[in-house]
Image 1 (cartoon, rainbow, N blue to C red):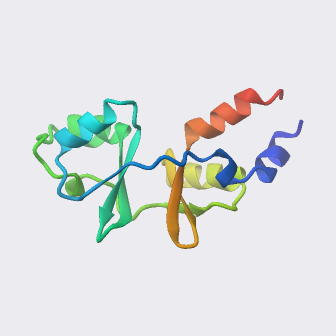
Image 2 (image 1 turned 60 degrees about the vertical axis):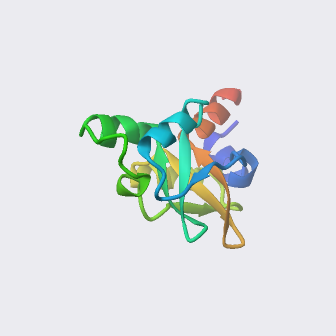
Length: 133
């Protein structure tokens, strides 16, 4: 199977995670860490009830732990803004290219101007490893 072709034919919506977890900007990093304890790798940060940013498990190592940011700090101080998105009907290859060029591992998936899921680099790697290439 041609890997490039298969990644061009599979759409983001077919691979994305539909379960979204979000938090208010005033949520503390301690509260975020408790939410992530359940195996959650990314939490959307909402502003005016709309996802505007994201905080990831990797942010805890790179932004928070490395800089000794107090856990009482609100998530809006360390979350990544603006939220990077990809339309649900785009091919997985486009998502991989975006992640690579932006040097990120997670993209919010949009459909009809709403966030409907998240696609991660792990999702793409799992797809590739499941294919008999």
